[in-house]
Amino acid sequence: MRVLVTGSAGFIGGYLVQRLLADGHQVVGVDNYSKYGPVRKSYDDHPAYEFTEGDVRDTDLLVKLLDGCDHLVAGAALIGGISYFHTYAYDLLAANERITASTFDAAIAARRDSRLQKITVVSSSMVYESADRWPSVEGDERQVPPPQSSYGFQKLACEYFARAAWDQYELPFTIVRPFNCVGVGEQRALGDVELPSGNVTLAMSHVVPDLVQKVAKGQDPLHVLGDGSQVRHYTYGADLARGIATAMTHPQARNEDFNLSTARSTTVLELAALIWRMVNGPDRALSVVHDEPFRHDVQRRVPDVAKARSVLGFEASTSLEDMLAEVVPWTLGAIAAGLV
View 1 (cartoon, rainbow, N blue to C red):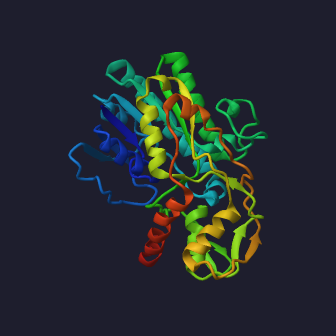
View 2: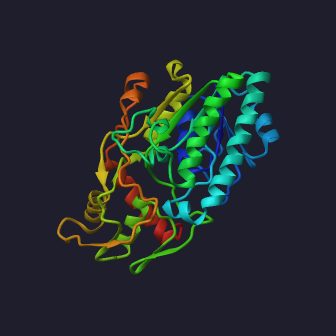
View 3: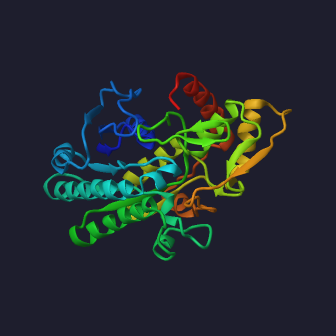
């Protein structure tokens, strides 16, 4: 199949393009390099990959790129760490709404005029930001209070775009919600704001690379946002890409939504202890200082993963320990290279 991936130079986008190419698809990528600047990917010269540097808000460009495509994966968005939610509260809402509207406008036109089968929307676990019961089951996002952050609210709006485009134009869709992607390649974004954390200054506010940076730079005691009891489900980027690719093509995924996540719950303190031991060894004791958390630091983000398992046959199988065994050395190298 021929697949257009928007945001193809991004963090999850990179894993997804690699997976789609491995599955034998032709892939058209589009990205404006607004997050990291121009980046080199391992698959850039793959014979089945075509890349266009461009802005997804250019609907005419998307219509042109969709010509001859069977599928569209809508992954482009302004996104960063939790500090992004606060620093760029308006920009995240306004820019992402324009990206979303343009993408759906192009998909509706392509569905009418070419062979486009479906749009697969990359949403976010942040649609469950205001959840008051766990685990979060598909459908809860329309039952619990709306997200409090502008980012979470806009990701929920993406899902309403998908359902509305089906209702009015019969554009088939699938919604996927990645939970806490962990992997290599996540570096300092162009718009990141540097924030002090004890004796270390960080520019990412993504918990895994941030903790690796602090430990690697010798921070002791280790500074943790909040009390460290926040629960997350850290999911490997390659697993998420496999889930997205499966949802894109699976016949039973039409007009359905799926949580894509590991089933394992991990607190921030448990994560910190794993990283500490991996960098410092088992004999150096960990001590922690608790810093004031961000306002939108959700305390529990726990998905129900039964639907993805039963319908798609998808399970995120990579353990957190195996993820960290790859990510920690990469992050140490990125620190030395000045990438984070």
